[in-house]
Image 1 (cartoon, protein in one colour):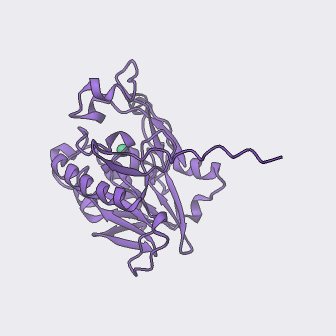
Image 2 (cartoon, rainbow, N blue to C red):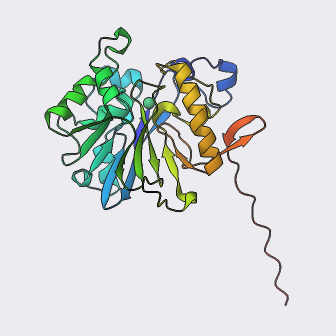
Image 3 (tube, rainbow, N blue to C red):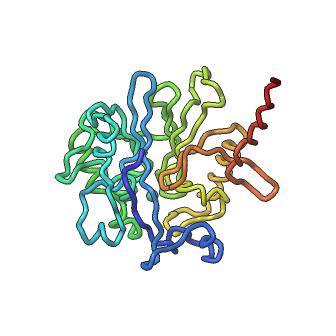
Length: 282
Ligand SMILES: [Zn+2]
């Protein structure tokens, strides 16, 4: 499901990666920005309805929307567009508290967009938003967090937590102190569904398929060394076990799978086309 678009600065987005490399994948606009999706994931499991990510939301100034190149961004509108009532959401998983993931926790007036939901945020992330690190001042959605907390809807969690059977949040760090991914189809009671149905929503640990070469760190990664290590570990598992991958900012068809090759990890190529049907004998 898609909540719209935004345009992060290309240099910031690709961080240490030189332009001659990333410019083969995507073109920057005249303001040096690239067009990225705001993807949301809706999961129905165990009788519960889970929304992953909230987009930018619409509680931002016109100037801010212009600089960030936001189009749309309203997660409640995205749900209604597919006939899902925002009040039917039981859990909202926020991968981390940057504006393009957590801004849509509340509506334009600051009321929670999902009035019946528990908003699942790692405690480390909530604490970082209220910490005294200068780098984080102004880039964590502290106000949105506090509005949700004030409404009694915040569920701070610590570590890996299974929300319903087969849907877990997995802390990864790397991008931010308390970043979390979402694992689907892996159950703590061991009664896994078909291994072919396992999936992961990466949050900004891997924002698009372009970051599958695991050393492509972004300038927005607060802990780049940790990000590369955890990405490498999880991408190796994803490739070995055939996990389906969802990315928050990817513009292509999702999900995809990853494969390990002699040149590193890459998007699994399409399965070979089926052979031409043989001409029936007449
Ligand atoms: Zn992001």
